Length: 143
Image 1 (cartoon, rainbow, N blue to C red):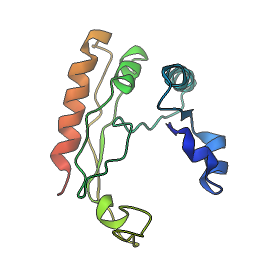
Image 2 (cartoon, rainbow, N blue to C red):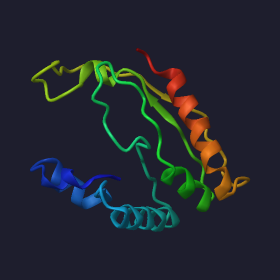
Image 3 (cartoon, helix red, strand yellow):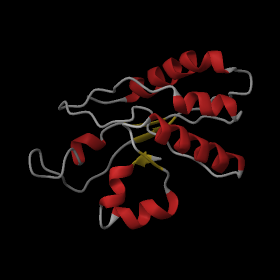
Image 4 (cartoon, rainbow, N blue to C red):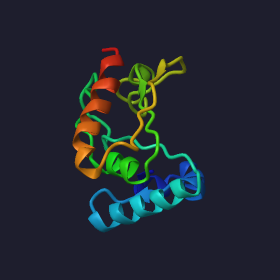
């Protein structure tokens, strides 16, 4: 799931049209449709990757922003395992398009956290789950 502006990219657009779910971040209807499609894909047994911040930070070095509720409500609604992942230092390698801070090849560290079972949760627990995942991911970030 990603921003629909990626559809305009000549390289990423082809990839994005075939496997991703686009969403216009300014439209609640678009977000609703995207999450409905995501739910349908989950029911088909497909995996889904969501960046719950829903944005890219403009601060250097970046700070993990507040998470949106949608991904957590979706996980609870579909009773699926949620697997938080921390990508700890990618910003040091690929901050921007290379024009201001530079981008270079390198190795990033990825931490895959223990899956969280959502079967015992209800929609009212989405905020608690969101906070729990935020703390997990943020605990591994290297600044």
